[in-house]
Image 1 (cartoon, rainbow, N blue to C red):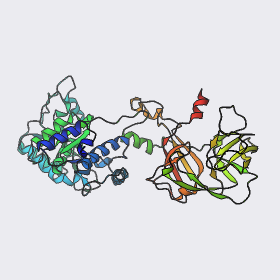
Image 2: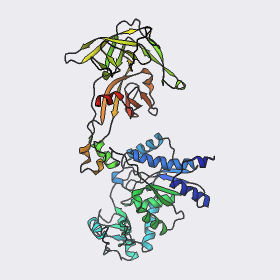
Image 3: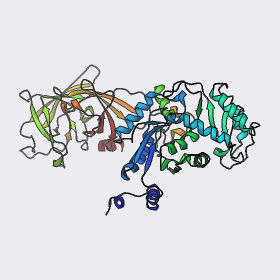
Image 4: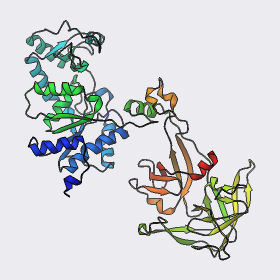
Length: 497
């Protein structure tokens, strides 16, 4: 089976395969074009993996292009964050990072070309009037009184726009298409608007900025994009995408293809709403109970180093060295003074095995003035390292632990559903549906081998889930781990019954 035959297929790959087989294209060139107006979310990861993944599979190219036509909402901080996200996902863009603003001069020339062809005009209706004149889904729009200006007048007015002769909202350049079109996007869409705003790439050179629908298709063509992949909400916009390219003098004629958006429940897929969560600090964490200390009273010596398997059923994953000492930390939920037979953890007067170490028995406890357990005093069976008790007694429970002397303090962030409803975007005020327990920040201890934890590496914490070191907050002096995937806790199910 060839590499091409082994690849999973879908309608986009089928289109690409046909284009290559028919000679329409000799190579594949895609792009990922985010607007740098916020941090990316998991929905963008689908687009990143699709565009960069297809380019990789077909030995093609994929550009990282910032569609930076809205200077008031964009920032270099988001540019750098997006670049880091693409790299974190394991992809490299082709050549230098691209910006739509690189093409502002060319875009202006193409706008002038449309004016010269009688296909664009300067409109002085207010934004409110433009919306009114556009009509509705069931009623056609009506033409602007400025729609039939001469080419010469439109050229002069567009130059006046460029030179700062109009206030914001008093003039715009519109395409002259069809005010009765059944597609709202084709009812003389705005191509340029006046904005007196500093741009993070071009500074104060421009006071007019092109709209996304005008910029996007031309940027694709200038970069030689063969397959322009975007989500389904841009399906109607494809008509405008094609109209612009068909009516300007440009060699490359890319085509837009749409794929479904990634939709997840109990979260929002909107950069605006995500930014609101961050800026308004709507999500806060809190500390839950700390681990509890065990003192093994009959353990002699300063400690020892145990060789523990990284996976109990996969010896090929190797082992790691873990320090064992007289005092160890355990999860507070792993001990009870009294419990029924289904509870397989440590109970006062009963035994349990410390994972990879010895069998211990809880003999007595110590509490503070508030009645909280501070210390569990235990005894251990020195002959149970790596084997069952010699007298044949059965010890079914196993719990994890960390040396109290050698373990490293760490902040553990436990993430849960961000919202209490499946579709918070449908709520009148999505902020009111935030899950107050979406983040629990715990203070705990980890094995010393995690002192140099790599943020790109995943780690499984016993019975807690998979974690990674926080890329910004974690350091050797102050460890911070974020839970990325939780594990099912069977005891929690038992208690829920």
